Image 1 (spheres, rainbow, N blue to C red):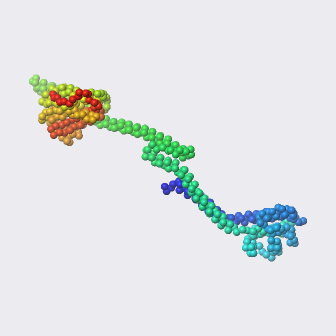
Image 2: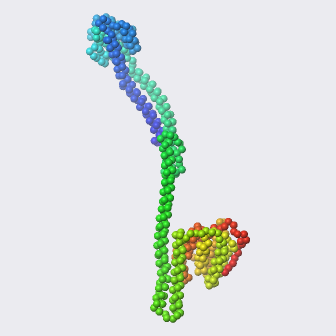
Length: 502
């Protein structure tokens, strides 16, 4: 990572070391010599004050000079000479170059020799820097008057500050190199300790951004990062619960919106279809009723015919309204299912007997092919409604050989019941619309037998409510409608396949 914590810590530590090193080199080169000289000046002035306070007109305090002043001068490598106004020796230190210092002090006093490189000058003393050619060394010299009369000179050698500064700088360079290596190692170790939980928090936040709330902070710790990780975990749990609740609310809201839209659409379709379907029978009823009222035909046979048409159309209207109410209850989910175990073969046999007379009128034969006992799960009343609609369609459209075949086909976990009738196949463009309300393939023929176009919509609603399959298959010599039901694991013993007709 370009801006990783490890790199930033290494850069910070190394930068700090280099800053300290640079500052030290700058101070050594610029200020060290001045400070060194200033310190020596302070030492010279301190010794001068000690001398001045212990030399009187009667002479020097020899014991003080031998003990205190000599010890101070020896510890600082100073040379001291004190004389009276006639240049008679009053005191000196053991390391003094007596003859040289006396000659130079005399030259300064009688002004034969002029001071050079004066650093500080007062009414009583002069401090100057003096090169000693024979020793090739610089000295700080302080000379002047003492209060009791007489003169003094103090010298102290000045080491090469530049050489000392170079040695110091080189030593600091070595020390800084070692410090940089140590800082790098320390930064790496520290950054790993800090970066590991931060990287984990980064991965955690990335997973949370993708709504992966199984991510948890596991590094622990009692510091601020550990507390942040615990807060991340709590935030993840809270977000998961909040989003879950929000999704549930959104899902319920979407279901409510879809339900409302579906209800509005169904209401519009219902009103449109009902008004369209009722228009013809109402017109017929109104027309024939007006004919009766105006006595268009006076004979009894015509009045009976008029009454029969009115009653027939009213019956069709009543049947259609009843079917629409049934379909409405199914689609709105107001009609509760009663799932139970029943013998569908017995149901088929009973239904075949009940429509036997209609089959004879249509000159059609109805045949059942299947087991004589088939236990299934479903709402028996609604399954009977499905079977009734299929058989009614078959009777109304049977043609050719005029045969209707009901078959029971066992499958792995279901039983398929199919109703086949001979006749013309359904046009392919109409098959996908068969299950729509009020859809009629042949409107003239449907009108002839009084169909409303609602029966297959009822079949669809019933089978959808039981979550079972249904459909239609075209054959070259007819049409087959089918539906499926959940079957019992084992059919009753003694159940055999057979075939019978009505």
